[in-house]
Image (cartoon, rainbow over all chains, first blue to last red; front, top):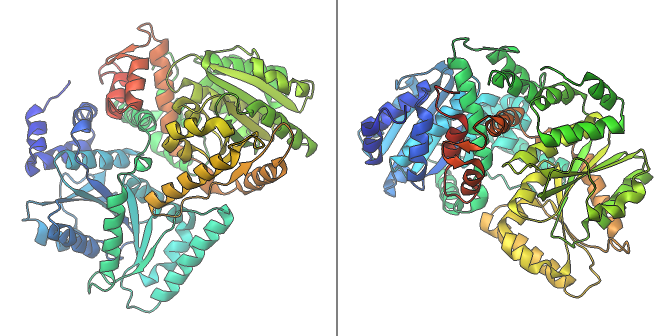
Length: 320
Length: 320
């Protein structure tokens, strides 16, 4: 099964958005043919920059992404938005409710907006998101935005596919920030507090600054600077500074230091595909250690080690 | 084949150095049973800190590591040294010529020194090194030193197993530094110019500082500070400052931010083990794309993509 849909891939490479949409659906469903597609498309990617945007529900991500689209379109950049909701089953292309705001861009052929849901297997959504981004890149987009709802570990994993990550908060997000502290600080390249005209905005910005300083102190090293912005995505206050910073960062991403090492990525893909095959096999999602989803949760909680999970996925050497 | 050598593992956990030595040999040979051992030992690791030491031949790494051993022993810390030579075939425990300097520690039961060579398959030595470190940790060592000869990508991959990496240079290393520039700067947490009493030491230190500054400027971000030291490992000049910095960094490594995410490591291990099984299979090291070693080189050179390599390793879905 080398390439069951050559015409779709050809149309994708010509920038056909319907082919792109159908291929994203196929990637989302995670079929056996996807690996071969990715092999073919890898060298056909554009120089697209990938931005991750995440934050708790109600932080105004859709409004911000809508503004971001307008900003890039004004500079004649083609923009693809992948709206990823880890809590939803895979969507087959349906647009989530809060995407409606962006639909004023839907008629623009320089804009592609798609929702991605999960088939519920561990790491599968991160893989599907990376592969959807490869598809968008091969279709010639200049900017790809990966938006996730929520700031749990799954959402942060998904946005880790991006070159850089913006975490969007609101003045009321203090509790979220405290709960997710280490993971959030590690994942974020930039923070913005949206709806900054509301009370509590300055307080949250100060808390974030203090957390970042404390982190640098604990590490006793100069960690990469994480800039903070107070904005109002709806009214436009402070947006120019944030967009200028994002543009400046996009321009710098040529540095090879930003790319994940190819060997690491190849080994990871083998791991992801092995996971997919275990799930797709007649035995289904049960592996030596029990249910695969339970095992994945136990791994993240530190209750089992990575070797135990690898062994469960691979089976013994006699039945590879 | 759950555990073919239970007595060896039991003896290892009691700190038996002969059991450790035999198990390191088994890990180096990369047998099918290693995955199961690692699963059993993962939760039995000590809180050992792992330091990588690398640099070009003649930089005085062995002399430095000898001093480092004495330093840790004076503080009653048990030290394991894994001397990794990617250019040698696997050693089965033989001690390389330049290890002789360290042999004055060989009679000390608080010190374990082993050479590790390569079976020549891509990524295999990095895996063996990580697994030898797990063995040392399970045997109760407090500090593990991974020493590699050379500063090519393979050597830098191997030391990436460590919590932190010290690159040791000599005043004559200017050319090496220029050649390896990006990779070296990315891998090093600290630099030391050894034999700093020789002419050219200050010049090299200035060049390193300029390269680090330039890197920070290109990234336009505050990158982690990389301290530079001028030392003489043989005469002891400047060593106290370097050793104090290493101790301070060891003490800070409790931060969970330092650990690689467990999911990433699990997926990588699946990739490594799949690679091993391909090599061990009757078809040998030939995969869809040709010779596996050629494919690995092409991947590092950017001539093929990670999906192509993953697909070659996995085969099509019908023959998993």
